[in-house]
Image 1 (tube, rainbow, N blue to C red):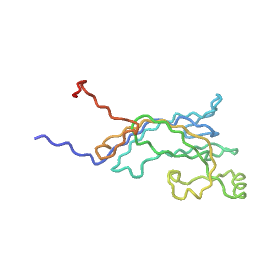
Image 2: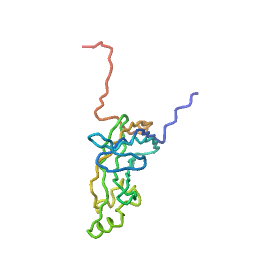
Image 3: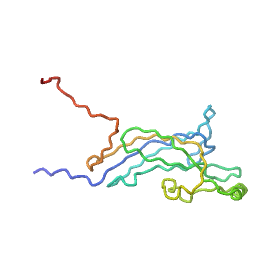
Image 4: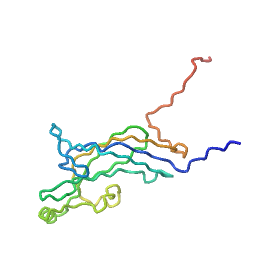
Amino acid sequence: MAAAAATPTVFLLMVNGQIESAQGLEEGISQITSKNRDAQQALVWNFPIDITFKSTNPSGWPQIVVSVYGPDLFGNDVVRGYGAVHVPFTPGSHRRTIPMFVPESTSKLQKITSWLMGRHPEFTDPKVVAQGEGREVITVRSQGFVTISFNVVTKDMKKLGYDVSPSDMHSVSLTDGIHNH
């Protein structure tokens, strides 16, 4: 007697790609880069991403959080931008442009003090960027864009009842060319 195939209890989400480049940010570390001499003056990283997630349900779908740092006038590494994007749930190739932002001091005194001390507001935990709670009370300033490209592969999502096929994908049925009238 042949054993029946076990029904999966988890699905896999595999993501690989790269943080390609940034426009509008001034400097960057983590993987060090400097501005290209072309007209766009883009910062090019091509920093690889390779992640595998395992889950039983899509609640709390993963996000990629990007933090960019660079030196200020005093040579201290300060935050140049934060941004986040949800990993697409449809398999295939994806490209996303993430708007970046930096927290701002709320009072003129804080702004002057932070400039004099060379300390700018930043998050103690970058995961706050991916959370909605409390974000409405944070003053931020737009700070350019980061481009990410990645491939998404899923395994066993359909077997667990989740349909992740692209909405513009249509099923095609093949016929043998014989039509009954």
